Length: 126
Image (cartoon, rainbow, N blue to C red):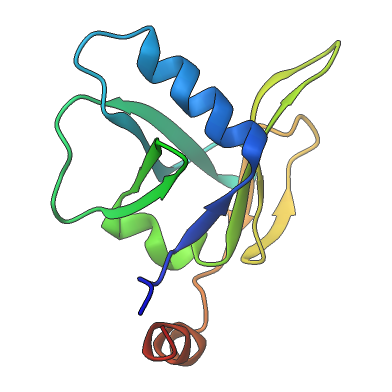
């Protein structure tokens, strides 16, 4: 039986996580979270993990390790993490079904918590 994952990541995101970890001493992966801020109310956070927190949700894809802060899990449930590199921007992107709006600059978002019933059903089915 597979373990339930709060988020998924694309091949490009996994590649970028592995690149980040390979260039940092003692790195195990990255940690996703959210914080209050920006004009839309919340911002995604991405931090380097040197010591995994056992309370975090852990997602692994082809050797790329992403940890999700417990306080962010309800806001990130069902999110697909990707990585894009364009002329104007390079960074992780998030397709989040819990996002209700975003600011014009793309730096902050408005998030609503995931449906707890859907979360419980998804965890029970894995």
